[in-house]
Image 1 (cartoon, helix red, strand yellow):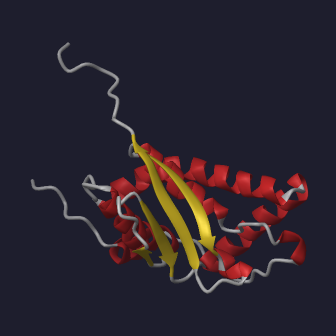
Image 2: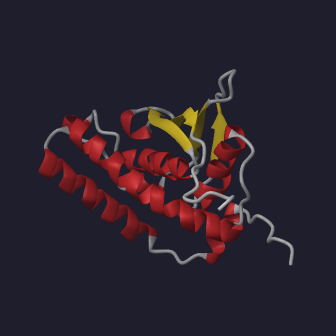
Amino acid sequence: MPPAAPRSGDAIFASVERVNAELFTLTYGAIVRQLLTDLEEVEEVNKQLDQMGYNIGIRLIDEFLAKSNVSRCVDFKETAEVIAKVGFKMFLGVTASVTNWDADGTCCSIVLEDNPLVDFVELPDTCQGLYYCNILSGVIRGALEMVSMKTEVTWIRDMLRGDDAYELQVKLLKQVPEEYPYKDDE
């Protein structure tokens, strides 16, 4: 039987179980609020959100690969397109675009057209250094690490901070060679 064709983000989003968007948004907001209360320092909250996202990403990649039928990407450019067009649609129901490639093809921006995490959110003046959606940068970093790509993911623009879009910069630091736990010749 031939391998199944890759599925679009829309097709996957239509077929997966979802939670109520408002419940998801409010629950995430409660997590961020609790972190702000517990950790007190905004920079520590940013680090914790990134680490939480990383832990989610290293597990989420398995579900993504199983449900999307995406084959191995040939390069970092294709990987970024799959994240933007399939991954964000599959898990958040939003589309994103990939822009601002550097000459080496190792750094780009992912611009979100919409961000369901920020519905009902206004940052108070005491939280101006907070990257509210920093969990997303951790998810991308964790997922890519599981497919042998060491990356650095940072927020460039954030509408909660007065910018005109949500933009993540994804920089490929190195392609890690895959290591197999066994030798083929034994």
